Structure formats: C-alpha cells, structure tokens
Amino acid sequence: MWMSLQYKLKRFIADIDMIWSAIRHRIIHLFNPHCPECEDERIEAKLCQMCEYLKMENARLNNLNVTLIEKLTTKIEEPEDKEDYSDLKPLRPIHVPWHVKRAELEMNDRKAAQAMRNAAVKDTNPKSDITKIEELEEKVLGDSKITELDLSNGTSN
Picture 1 (cartoon, one colour):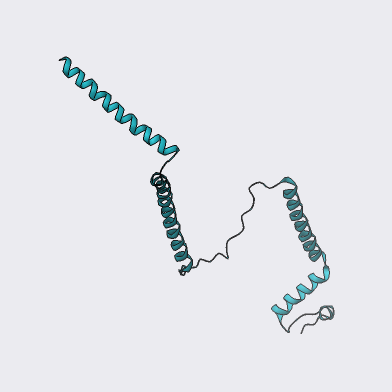
Picture 2 (spheres, one colour):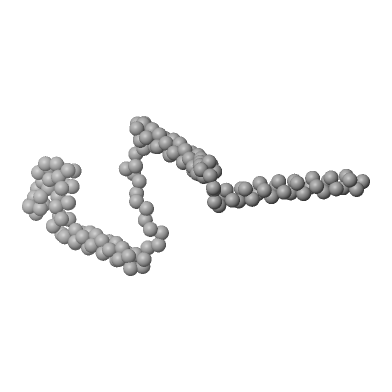
C-alpha cells in the first residue's frame, strides 16, 4: 500500500510539473517570444482573426452595394390607377386663434351687410319698378298696350 501511494504521489508531482512547464512556456512565449517561429505564430494568429473579420465585413459590404445598385438601376413601375385629388380640400388647423376667428366673422358680417344694402338700393329705386312693370305689360299684352293718354281720352287701341 505504501508503494502505491508513493507511486501515485510521484505521478501527481510529474503531472503538475508538466502542466507548470507548459504554462510557463506559454507565458514566456506570449510576452517575450525568443524564437522567430514563435513570433511568426503570434503575428499569424493575430492576422488570421483580423483577416477573417475583415473578409466577413468586406463580403457584407459587397452584398449591400450589390443590392443598392440593383434598387437604383431597376425601373420603378408607377401604378396605373391614378386617383383624382382635385376635390380634396386642405386641412385646417384644429385650434383657430380667437383674433383670426373674429376677423373672419367680421368679414362675413361686412359682406352680409353690403349684400343687404345692395338689395335695399335695388328695391327702393322707383325707376326700376316702373321698368319692370312695363316689361311685364309688354310680355303679357304685346302690342295692344293701353297707354295713359288713351285712358284719359276714354279710347283703347
């Protein structure tokens, strides 16, 4: 039993020594490569990772450029059904300030007052009434119009 324990202990120490030498070798070569092969390995490892990244990025950008060029060179088809937008009115703002609304109401009132004044002027003009009556008489009676002179004489045409 003592022998097997000594054997296991020696084997354990040998394994630890081998692991320690491998770790020490890696640490020394990592920070201070002493031979050109180790230095080339270190540079190649860095370049390979960087090269792979650059290759992937280059491929991605090339793919993006191809899709953009295809989109730019393809002819855009316009829809055949064109809608008529002539009857659309522009949108008004939701909130109208009071001074704008007041000015609009005053303008509408002025227009209504002017229309009423114009209508009153037309209605009070006696000549226009007489001409209207004469026009109606002409339409209804035609040539057989009774004049005031005929009425005073008591005769008719």
